[in-house]
Length: 276
Image 1: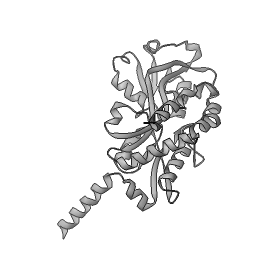
Image 2: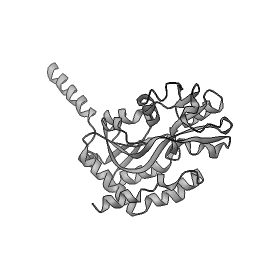
Image 3: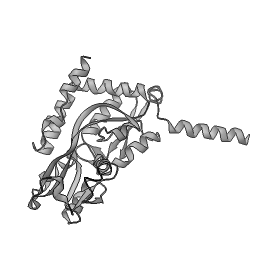
Image 4: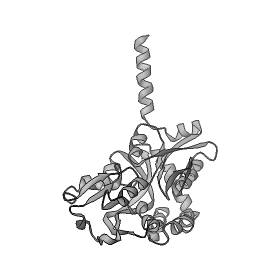
């Protein structure tokens, strides 16, 4: 009896480690979606309520997958929690400002993109910094678990003369920057773009570091049917001008024209996918 109990328990634990399939999600009438709680305007937990572009996107994708007959459960997460929570079956999808990188593709699968981004640096205007090498001997803030953190780890030689200091999120990083604990904040431009709007003493001093990245929905590796369902709904939303409306009503207003609309409108990609 004891052996049977142990076998049953181990089987249960193994099952829990694998993500829910599309059929299981439809059967349970529930989909769990990890969303950012610290990345406006994509996702922000404010006064106990989640708001932002990705919250609306997640709600639409989730409800459509469930045929509007179930519950979309939002799970607030940070950048470093996205992949572990997918792999541990704590969430079914991550719609959480996650750029597609080679390192991440080894661990999870990605949908077609819904945004693009690149890495930038914010610093004080008075510092007159224009390129990464200007930070030699200075300190850069980086959030663990983010694309910028991965880039620092990958390009160690490029950052060998720069001090790297960790911070936990947009507000914490900007507070540390303003208090003089660091000279710059290195992160995705979608996060940094609002900081010069909030404080005109700061600027996007280094507008691009590395390459342009695609932002997409994360799914546990091998969860093919769920991934297909997500891709289908992203294309359907594109046909309905969801992303154009989001740009006009959210991003254009939020960034006050500082960021080009190329980050938010991927019509060329969607048109290609729809015709092939």
